[in-house]
Image 1 (cartoon, helix red, strand yellow):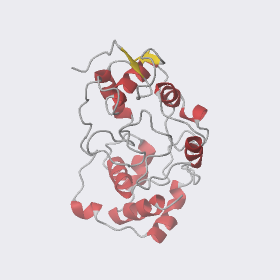
Image 2: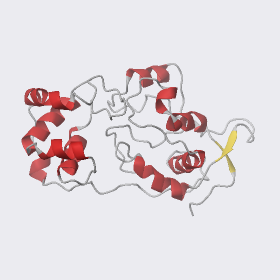
Image 3: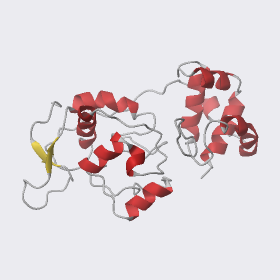
Image 4: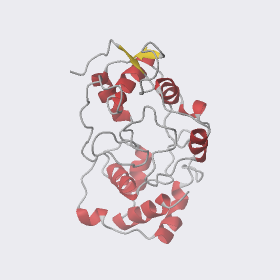
Length: 236
């Protein structure tokens, strides 16, 4: 049963030395699962998790920053922090979720931060269930969720013209930074094609509630959305 974990556990995820070393109390994993919905637009977790806009979060505890592999492209800042020895523990994850840019100044993670300490504890309790150790944390349920909008296979199969996407991108780049940075507007550089296409169609159908993006997406054809997706995925 996933509930509030009242026992002290080793946050690093590997038992070494006395059991009393560096322990914390984690929060309510069930509530953390609900909070994870804010993360799920970029990150996946669970048995079928893949790298998407952000890396998957399986085995995040004890993992070196910037090391998930599978060709995922991290920001230079996060890759550098990993090379310098940053390990994701309870404390470092808590600091990163609180204010990503305070820990990694040039991260591409477009998230302002979760300011409530109880919320962060609950979210970390949920994430902890998908890391290998300690074994006494109950296994959480998979977080596979339906797409925001179901598109016909032929729409998802459109191969976008990158050159045409570059031509169309000027309007996007009046707000979204070409550097991939986040100055109050999410970065879209390097987004996987499918994620970009689904997001734009969600705006087009007014499922995502942003009036400017709804207007912009509403003017685009399926081929134009595919072209933009191909262009932005290929940018470093």
